[in-house]
Length: 294
Image (cartoon, rainbow, N blue to C red; front, side, top):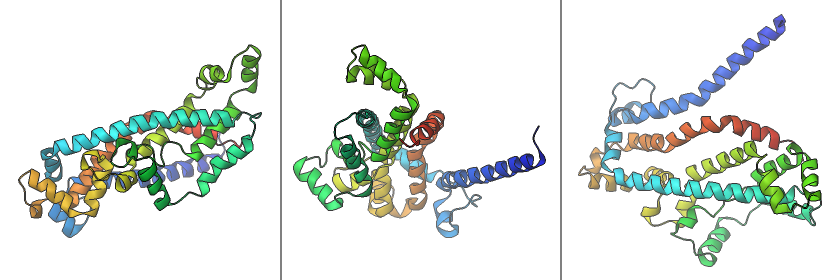
């Protein structure tokens, strides 16, 4: 039976969690409501939870230019799927190697991985490297390779998971039976790393889905724009909205420039809102297990 102090602490904890949940959910609610607000009302009155006039104009213009956004969605989905798979494979392999205590030069390799969390070559050097040496400008690889394929933080999390959550005896028993490292990795380490793989996949997938910087740096061809790149372009320039208006037979002056930004943001974030709750429990479990100091 709970004491009085425990009951009071439980009540306060629930109140705090409710307030924190509202603080996280209310911006999304405002985003959705703003996307259905009349553009003139939004410009005069600003965004509100109770707008004086609602409108579907923003979504109507998106529907009129459906092919543009279907293509952008296709690029985003393709990049996210390929990038997430590659991210999981590279992270799992690197973390497994670094988790081996007997690895020659293991401390140096670990230092090199952690070093990338603190320092990098800078935007200019990175741009020159990818454009002049790897020639990925205006290719789909420009949206996959730079900065996102593997993250040092994720490698450290997964290395700690391998070291602390999987019994070393399993590895040793497999080696005594003559198993090689590839067999141990594929048959023991990976099958027992479900929560961590889901965590890395979710983090990598969200990073790829929300990425717009690679498009900004390396993509000039609008056919390779992702949904986030389109949103960023629209936020930066009214000329993009004007081009949408010309394709739908509407003048730029009549375009719902303010609410269309909100509508595109809603369309862009919907898949994340659907997928995240499914993987949330694995995400939390993986972070807790991987955060243990190795």
